[in-house]
Image (tube, rainbow, N blue to C red; front, top):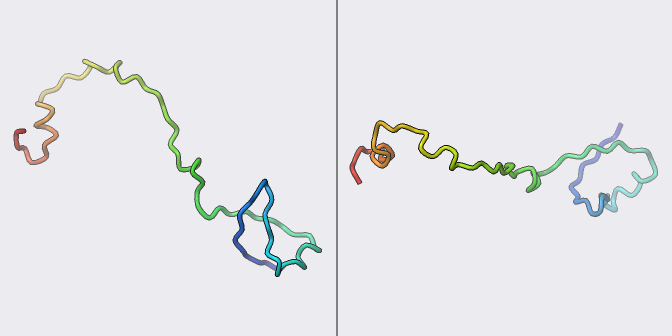
Length: 76
């Protein structure tokens, strides 16, 4: 089995093969597709619509929230 490697973009579900491999059109080939980088759709985190108001008033705090967030312990 022979192997060649090249980079190409698909257009309308078609992949262009470079002209200097024109003899490869005459023989059966095995195609393996590898994505060079993730598509924008793959990088997206699915949005979940959560009503945060349902959590209002459900937490009992033992410290002042702004003082707790201040990592140096200084008052604001």
